[in-house]
Each structure stands twice: as C-alpha cells, then as structure tokens.
Image (cartoon, rainbow, N blue to C red):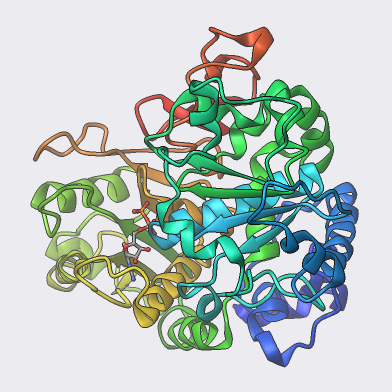
Length: 478
Ligand code: GDP
C-alpha cells in the first residue's frame, strides 16, 4: 500500500537520491516532493553523483543567465542584428509543437543538449506549458519571456527559413568566420540528415559559438547525442545506467501543477490505491479513421492474457472453485481517446469471472475522442493520465506512441509494446516486452558522424540500438 512506501522512505528520499533540489517551497507545487514519497515505489534506478552535481551547477547557471538578469538583457539586445554578441551566457529555445508526449520528449532532449553544451533552456510559453508544469529550476524561470524579439517569427521557422542550419549546410551557406546571432535547428520527422546531425563534432564547432539556438522538434533525439565521442564520454559519466536517461530527466523536469496533481491524486485514491496490483494499458490508434477497432481490442486481450498480465476468463465451474474469501484485486487503468476499449474489457470480466478468482476492476479516466492539443483542460487530462499510468506495476503501451513512452519511462517500467497493426488484422505476436525503458528516437539519422560515415546509426555504439517497436527501426538506448 502507499503507507508502506512512505514509512520505508528516509526523509532525504523526497529529493529522489539528490535528483531534486531542496530549494523550493513545497506548497507551490505539491507534486514535486510528494510524488516519489506517497505514490511511487522507490525507483531502483539512482541518479549518479555526477548527474546530481551537474544539475546543481546547471541551476546556478540558469539563475545567472535566466530571464530578468543582466546577462539575459545583454544577450537579447542585438538579437535582430547581425552583430554578434559574445557574453557569458548561451541559450537554447524550445518551440512548442505537436502533442504533449512529443513535447515532453523534446524538452528533455533539448535540456540534455543544454547540459552538455553549457547553455540554458528556455521554453516557448505561448501555449499552455505553464498550466501543466511547475518551474523546475529554483529562483528563476524556464519560460521564455513573451517579449522575446524573435518569438513573433517562430511560426515561420521551418526548412525554408534562411537560418535553418540544415538548409544552410545544403546551400553551402556556412562560413565559419561569420557566426550568426541565432540558428534554427529543425528536428522533425521530416528532417534531412543535415538537420539531424547537428550534434556531430564538426557541426558543433560552429554551432557552439552561436549564442541563440532555436529548436523545433518532435522526436526524442537523445540516443543520437551518444554518437558524438565528446558527448558520449560525458554521457557515460552522467548516466552509467544508459537506459535511465529519460527516467531521471523526466522526474527532474516535469512536476505537474497543483491543478493536474489534484486530478492524479484524486483518481488514484478513488480507484487505484486499494488494489493489490495495478496494470496500465495505453491504446493509441494511428489511422486516419481512428476509433474503436475489434482487431485492436483482440490485440489487447490476447497480449495481456498471453503475457499473464490478465487472467483468462473462467468457466462457471472454475469461477465457483476459485471464489476465495479474500480474492486478489487487480485494477486496470486504460488510457485511450476512445472509451469503448475499457467498456469492452470491463464487460468481459463482468460477464465471466476470471479463471484465477482474481477480481478485475477496469477504469478509464477520460475518452476525449480526438486530440485537442493546446486546450488547457484536454492537455491537463493527458498529463494526468501519463502520470497515472506511470504509477502502475506493469504497463502495456502502443508502439510508436510518445504518450506511452513518457508513461513507462517516467515510471521506470519496461513496457509490453503493442505492435502496430497492418491494416485491420491483429499482429501476431500481438505484443513484445521491451528490453529498455527508454523512449525510441523514431526518425534518427541514417548514419554516423565523420569516422562512422556510411555506417548505419544503429550499429555504431553497442548500447544505441534499433527499437523493438518499429520492427527494428529507430534508435534507442539499452
Ligand atoms: P503520440 O501522438 O501518441 O505520440 O502522443 P502525443 O502525446 O504527442 O499526442 C497525442 C495527443 O492526443 C495527446 O497529447 C493527447 O492530447 C491526446 N491523447 C492521445 N491519447 C490519449 C489518451 O489516452 N488520453 C488522453 N487524455 N489524451 C490522449
């Protein structure tokens, strides 16, 4: 139960092994210190001392360079001109785009890049970031002030933009003696290798000198950072357990606001806290005509039964035999845009008891029907569900879904991935256990940097391999 967890924790553990700073007031953001104590089993994965000291150093830097400081004023003064500012602070700006799962993966990626390159991260706050997450760095803000001069142009930043790094490379417009005051880095599914390979050493030698980098991303590009030998040396020290990158970064960066935290805790107490075991199932349909599909329902049932996550349905006799006085209660938390999936699962277990006598209770917090990114309440529900899923004991997620990636990685769980169906048939096998709790970089560069040019990017570093959920495409840390 949750009480056992809090009893067994020492007071210091509310900082999750030093991952969090103690410099925040608790009530402004209840989730920050409470989530690990009251709701989550202690993570078996501890942050390295090196990561902890690097984060404390980063917090100091952010405070020194962040909005409202002298350094920030200096750095923004000549942004619109070609005059190059050489001050003490360098920045990386994250543009909000795509769904919430994508956003969380890219904030973590851009933050790690900032840690490696001694920049500070600032978030585009024109959407609802502020309604979702508390500030992660004490005594400063990670939100880009709304009067930031280039902000009005962000929507036009794409591959055609003259300061797009990949486009400049394509056009041979890079002149290492002319450092631009800002560069735009395009890291989307439709990026070219020239965009994706900004992390290579030869590219970094110029990029490193540019005071403002502006990223639009919808992919988890962390695995590719390990392909740069300089970064790799540092990353191995930061994350000796390689598959813990997002797990640690997410628990460091993403603290739901009190409003979202209220949704998480009330739902948890109402439906999940008393169960003996919790199973999370996330069902994402990637189709133009998305909705309820019998082949997906079959896939979920066949996966969970085959992997013994849910019991088989019993016959009348079995059910009678197995009716014990204190049957085991299993809570199943379903997350999907479509409420039919949980309705169907619930009906199955109401009509027929489980063969093991376990009591299966099925819950689905919402059924929003369609994605409504940037609507405050919709995004808050999505975040609350990712968190609720992360509090389960076992998790089944849809392959390729960044929503699912956030949920399992945050929870430190290796998921069972529901393979993406081909047409209207249930895949066989329906799912497979992932060997890693890291998110997948869905559209990585095709090859490595200089020395590894021409070598498939999944064959360069032994622990950066192809992902299981795409029938072996993409890149993932193991
Ligand atoms: P991805 O498209 O699966 O990679 O995940 P994203 O989070 O980037 O985008 C999907 C968006 O659709 C979410 O952010 C939500 O806005 C919405 N959505 C998808 N599935 C669910 C769900 O199970 N629950 C809720 N509340 N929203 C969902």
